[in-house]
Amino acid sequence: MKALSIKQPWADLIIWGFKSIETRTWKTDYRGKLLICSSKTIDRKAMRDFKPLFPEDHQFLIGKALGVAELVDCTKMKDFHQGFALCDLYHGYSWILETAKEIEPFDVKGQLGLFEVNYTEVNQ
Image (cartoon, rainbow, N blue to C red; front, side, top):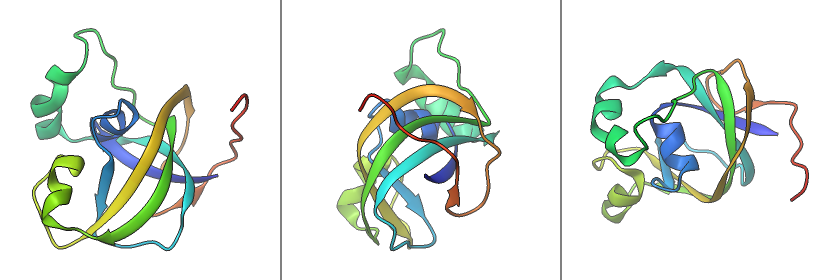
């Protein structure tokens, strides 16, 4: 399955349904299931800003596959994307995600760009 590494807390914000647009400086033609993986790097400012959205005892896992979302579009970022992306407008791309759901976490060595992980969804 195609996978994407995303820093925490952004990965959990996607899985928990707070964020439906991931922003990147590059575009992709890929559409379909996307394994959401937490990188081993944490965005400390975002962690301070968004931690109140989660239960006090929430564990932000790193270096793990956390969930699956459907990548339905990739377009230049527009003003109205800001709220869905939880960030300010910049000159990059909006990866539009739907139906994000949590999976049983497992270890993944993240990579830059889209990469392949041997994972098959069961009981869909």
